[in-house]
Image (cartoon, rainbow, N blue to C red; front, side):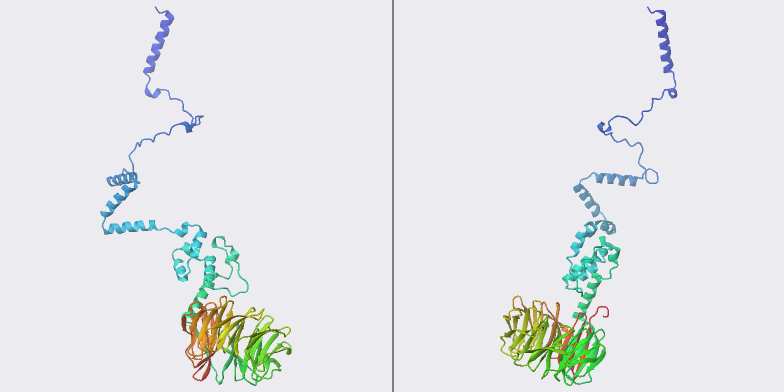
Length: 542
């Protein structure tokens, strides 16, 4: 039996439970909110499964997708779940079901996505290295039109400097320039630098093209006097022409216009040379004259030779050496008009000479050449070996080359006086020589031009240049220009020996020629008159 108190508690508990069951839903107690911050280690908890999508997808306008959109979505999701082979098969079936218009749309849509600028994806240094293998400037020009990025790459100075080196387009300066910076590291001061390898290459390339294909005749002078041109010198400021009619004519090298005539010799002028504004000339009157070109006045008349002054060279503005048919050479102080040394030893006319430093070498009709010390007047060596007269000589400070009527050219050592080699191949007089480093070019009365490698003493090119004697020639690292008694001036490739073109209209005979980077001068006889033509190949004027 329950006691009274127990019965009371029991009845109270049953009444409370009944009260709880009758409370409405809205009055049920809300469980306390659990804060987000907790000490639980979330990395140890499993990744929850994705929440189920409670609402159907909607389009951009907020409405449920249409049947077509739902189909596209289903196809796209199915395509993404395929492997690569299954994708390719599906694409092939779809493309086979397309008409031409649809295929064109697909092509236009896909093409831009397949294009990739490989240079843009590479480091700039590697991109520039790739471009450095292009030697053709036309290809580089077309490449610069591909995109702005390619154009910026091709504006890099390193690319054009390397191209200048490969094409032998050297700067005409005494010192080598520093390497220009690349565009990625270019400073404002370097951007303001006036010199540009790209512009330099462009100008030189156009000049070379003009040499090969065109150019223009800047001016043509027809002399009213009858005379033979005996000497010619072309430098940065003047063209100086000596003639056998006692006159020396001076022209402006920039435009070819006549400036003045130096008169004073009483016989034909057979030799001349000028340095800066000082001109020295010699001729049949046995005199050596020193001129000031600016004033056209003769500063000194040097007497001493007893026959025609046939050759003349200047060491500098103070010292000159003359050679005469009287078999002597004379060393002059042309500033004061004094004789310093009389160089005697040859037994016949001194026909030619060259100066390098304090050494002068002379060639004579006595079949020998001699090496002289200008400072002391001492004969250092007598070079004997030719069997006939020596008509031409070349000297670079170490090697001496002589050309003779015996149809050979001989190479000598300046130090020892020994003959280093005999160059055979011409069949007549070797009257024209030019020496540069290890390259020697000879021209003969047989009409042939030969190019020799003095490292091996072998003829590397034989050119049948003219139908008569080669009267003049000049070469540089790219070309040879030759003139002959057949009246033609011809341009040749020095590397291959190929004929390029004729430089002027044919005349009766070519007397002298000379050229620089952008200009050439030809003196010839045409229709019985003495004609001088100045040819211009400048890129800025063509």
